[in-house]
Amino acid sequence: MTPLTSDRIAITVLGKNYRLFRVAGGKWAIRVKHRDMNPHGAVKVLGTSVPQIAIKNAKLYLEKLQSNDWSAMEAMKARSMALTVGEIIDEYRKATAELELQPITVTGSINTLLRVITLARYCDKEKAKETPLTLLNSDLIASYWKVTAAENRTTTASRLNQAQAVFSTRAMGIYRRKWNLPDLKEFSSAPKLRKRLSDQTFKEFGAEVAGKLEWEAQQIRQTDPDTFRVYLLAARLGLRDKEIVAIRGDWIEERRGKWVLAIIDRPQQPFHTKAGVNRWMELSQELIDEFCTKIGKPCYLVAEGKSPTTRQNAIYRTASAFIRRYLPGRSKSLHELRKYAGARIAAEHGLYAAKEFLGHATISTTEKHYAAYLKDVCAVSAVSMIAPLSATNVDFRTIPK
Image 1: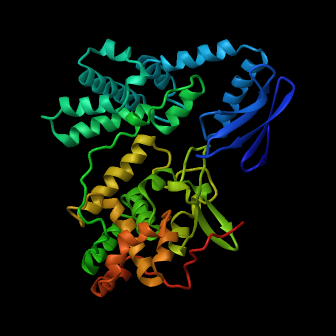
Image 2 (image 1 turned 180 degrees about the vertical axis):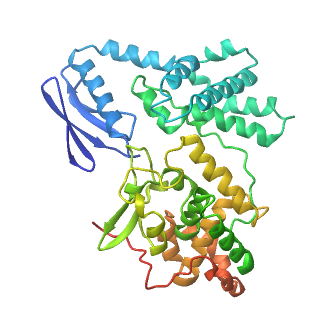
Image 3 (image 1 turned 135 degrees about the vertical axis):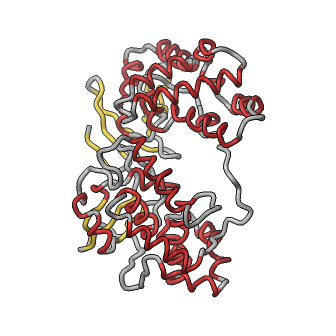
């Protein structure tokens, strides 16, 4: 297999050459001809955007076609639609090592998934395992919320979030190697309980608070380096929490004589940028010094050597709790630092520069959060307290190789 271009892959199956190509939505597909069923050629979408999985699916599909066993293909498809929760659970448990999860985490997600189903369908655990995947939909979610109406809503939402982990992007990729899965977006992407803010524009928190937060972050640099690094990546670069969880030393590369952090699609890890927006962010000397021993290496910048659960806790819980001490009442404390970094860029370089810096898909998103803020001249006074920037050391343009 030799990639021809960024969106073409050549494969050879049973002595014949084929090309995989991307279609709308980023998924891979293959065009094949069958002397009886599709003599003029037909496109088969392979159901994945991950090259390795697409190649496996394509080979399975071609082997079936070339053996002229279309009935077997239909049987496999029908079998996939009849998959049960129990079969998915067994596969999820087998994939513990590949998913880089602790056994206790896997067991907890499985038990919570079964609990959600038993409550929603009024059945026992064994019946829950026999539930067809096609029944994991919005109706089941609605039933679950109704049954648990008397419980603490945050706890209920947390359970649903844990149950959905069984159908994470990485886990679904593993399942698709074996089955042609039905669409589970209604269940795996069901809205979680979140506090909705009436006004989502950036609300500056003042020079005094910003100064205290910066001073305290410097004090924990030695005693709690993971929290300090999370703080740096959010406050200096405005990274999303998802990006901080995944970021590694080999994401830092030298371009045009500068060290830049490449936030780009990396399906092998797997990591996908939000809305498909790639960006290359120049690192300050402070960040280069902090991560110098990890530059170019395939190791995580935060909580290296620790389990995925521990690494996520360091970001979503420990670092967030640290920030919340100085920013009480905010719905997403860590995200406040991202917004603060965006506010600094918007104030010094304008909304378009902030859009590029933050990786927003459209300028309207940036305007929604920062336009009202910029109209308040009093708010600008606090902007330079965390990581002051100047036009001479910031390059918001994409830096080509």
